[in-house]
Every structure is written in structure tokens, then in C-alpha cells.
Image (cartoon, rainbow over the protein chains, first blue to last red):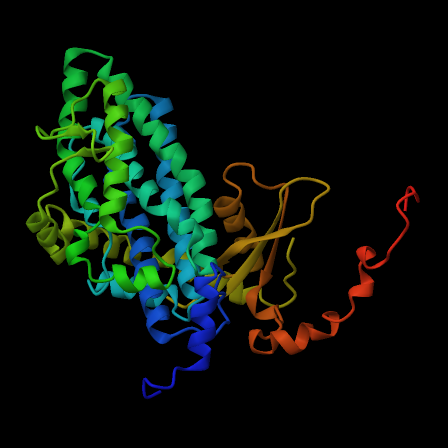
Length: 316
Length: 93
């Protein structure tokens, strides 16, 4: 294509997207659309499975059987979410193994939030309330994303995330209404997770590299700053019910804008964490790779068993 | 590690309804696919029955031919009940 004569397939593709239609795996799509989706879905899938680590950290130390069962169910959900998303990515012609190799080699990223450590039990509550709350804010519009398999995966994920956020809120509320020490622990967790949660929406619109095209392709519906504002507006009233303080002295309701004014996260810190220099980056990938390698005998054994019984095997 | 085959998962949410495509997963064999499908797609009692089908066994119509393929139905509006004019006073028809 020389630019003056648009590819008719591309015209048809864009018309379908503009009419809020859905693109399905075997439809023609621009290479850049495919690449952009693979990048985004893979990053999302990686975030789900890396996100199992900071929470898995507290399963053995959950304060009650009830909290332990809840936390295990949540971590199991993250594995499931990873699977839905890897499956969605595979419809674009990449393989899950290939994507995992890229993750392990540091060539694909995951959400920067999971490079922060979970220092106390209250972090489980703060992650559910703030991190999953931010994730939901990001993900709900993705349920209407132009790529069908991604949108369908997001519908399932959003339904399940709602439990994640509510259990986190409830857990923090219990701590906040508990002893002085418990309340202090909850406040400390909110103090540490607030700004990293705001950073989950990505760089400010003025610096976002992917927003423009993602919007035109119907992958993204709202800009990073719009979603961040939405999250703050939803979360501040919840913090009042919790009786916990948002660690931002400049946070206040702006009558004129109809939104809260708030302090932006430290973008320099976000850049550092994304580029590999966060508190836990190395640990997360090392752990991921080691589990992958140490667990490979399980899939090898299953494959050997399947090969041995391949003849005459019928599904139950 | 060898790549495990891909399976399509269909879930019947309750008796009386048909199986609906829920998603896909990798598994070495049908029995494992079924177990994994249970763990992945029915963690919240979303189903009472699951089918797993090797993705390679599915034959699909081609999106490139979709117009031509589905065209024959396009000009046969007389297949719909609303095609027929019936006097207003006629009941139960």
C-alpha cells in the first residue's frame, strides 16, 4: 500500500470497529492491531500469574481458616485469569509457551504493582481493595474491547474480580475496627499501596505512547488519566467508611470539576519499577522461572501418560 | 516441555440448556482436559456438564467467504412468520 490507496480490508476493518462491532480470530486485521493486542493481552496474562506471588506469600500465615480459604480461592482465580488471557492471546497466532519464554527473558512486562513487597497481613486487604479496585476500573471497559476473545475473557474476569475487591475491603474494615495495632497496620498498608495503585493506570495521557491508536482500534475506551480520576472518585468515599486515611494531604473535592483533586504518583518511580528496578522485580521473575522449571516434570509425566494411552482412549 | 494440545470447552450451565462454548485450555489428554476445564470454568458452580473437544477437530466456516456462504438465506424472507399479512381479527395465528 502506498498510503494514497487505502487497503480495502483495512477500511472494512476500521468501519466494523467504528460501528462498535467485534473482530474475531479469523478475521483480517492490521498487523499492528494484532501486535498491539498480543502485547497488551500477554502483559495482562503475565500480571495475573505474577500477581499470585505477593498474595501466595501470606497463605500459610493467614490469621484464620476463613481468611486462608478466601485467599487461596483468590490466588486460584488469578491462575484462572492468566489462563483465560493466554488462551485469548493464542487466538492471535502466538503460543503460550512462547509468551512465557518472553516473560522469563524479561522481554515482556507485567504490571509494575507486583514488584512491591507484601510486608504485613493488612497488605492482603489493601491489595484487594486498592489494587483489585484499580484493576477493575481498568478492566470493566475492556469487556467492550473490539477483539472478541479478549472482551469475553474480561467479562469472566470482571465477575470474579468483584469478589477480590469486596473481600479486601471487608478484611481491611475488620482490621480498622479492631485493636489500635490492627488499625495502624491497616493504615500502614494503605499508605504503602495508594500511590502504586494510582500508577497502575500508566503514565499521564501527555506521555502515554499507546493510548491514541488503542482508542482508534476500540481496544481502549478511556485514557489513563480518565480512569485514574474515576478510581480516585470511587475510592475516597470508601476510605471514609473504612476509617482509613488516604496518604495525600492535597486530596480534596473540587466542586467546580465535580471530581477529587489529588497528587499524582511519582512517575520517576514508576519508570524505575517498569524498567526493572523495583523492590521485587528480580525475585518475582526468578521465582517464576524456578517454579516453571521445577514443575516441568508434572507436564512431562502427563504427556508421557497421554502418549502411552493414546490408542483407544475415549473421553469419559 | 512439549506443547500440549488445545481443547475447546463447552459448559451446560443447568439441565434443560445446551452446552455453550466457555473457552479453551491446553491439556495432554481428554481426561486431564476435563479436569482442568472443571477447575478453570466451573469454580463457582457455573456448570452441571462439560464437553471438551480437541480444537483441531473443529471445522469452521471461513470469515472471508461469510457473505457468499450465508447469502442463500438472505433473500428468503418468506421463511419468517412476519412475511405474511393476516387480518387483525384472526386470533391465535
